[in-house]
Length: 431
Image (cartoon, rainbow, N blue to C red; front, side):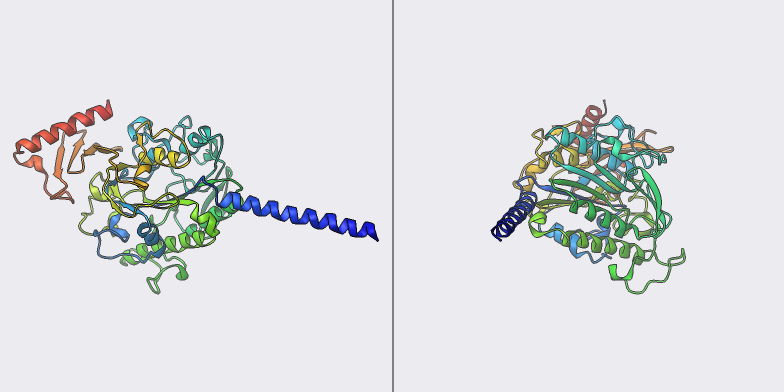
């Protein structure tokens, strides 16, 4: 009998210690000083399609995205590229488009490029578990490339730039493609959530929704507030469908955040961006239909950027000049890399806690089969130069929506001086 008691005692002791070990592991994971990183990308959603900006008079209901913005910082001068691929390439490499030859949608990022996730782990002794879930759009139309070969731990999502049907689309996971019939926004969220729950060390989740990119469609009714919508046809107003897609994305962001234990969420820095301007069919004033997606006007490249969570103590609007390439150095510093500037990327991590000045100028560009152009701004003035010799010059302080091209009139001495400065800086950037 005494041996029976001894066995029971030993098993109880081991069980208690195992429970303590599991508990300690959970505490270590969720309250570590190393923050988790949740990077959220909306597709084709400009300032006119989200709360917190004066542009646009019709706004979706997005309580979860609003909470990210309201509890942290909103950057009013965040520049991207006018289409999806170059924005993503600039963020994941920290380089301007002309350096990677990704300056338009569907162009290919060279597999030799050092991407953000690999750079972080190379410089932090593999501190992070890394994943990209959702839209990749960095390998052209070649669906045989596995994004994990760039140095990711995990990839699952939409390889190309868009789907024909949000409910029937090609899902690629671990290099294998199959057809998914689950609503893309829901599927991406579930994939991201499941992956996060499996991690036992700090994680970096790059979650790239394809919403609200076309096609216009009816999302699951529980996810939006646009009321009963008939199946979309070209004869209908696309705006409610566009807004419903954004609301569905917000709903799913809420689902993901709600499934994070409080300690883990408190230890997560959250970054939310739009990758380029709104599709012309649903763009709103004050932007013209030629000033949004596919253009280097403000409506095409001046996008939402919200940051909140772990380590973000400032709130409100920050007016610093930020470029999409700056995401690289910023998230690297958040992850513990000490270098604050690399390639064409400058970290704005310091702005999370204090006022500072990061850049004097910001830059963007585009190049497709018909148009080659680049632009630079010092915050007050903006210069656009086209390869055909055309120039446009705007005073953003009095003309923020670029309606009056100053080169069509005689420039003042001060305007000439600023324009020359911008030209010189542009030459320095592109040399």
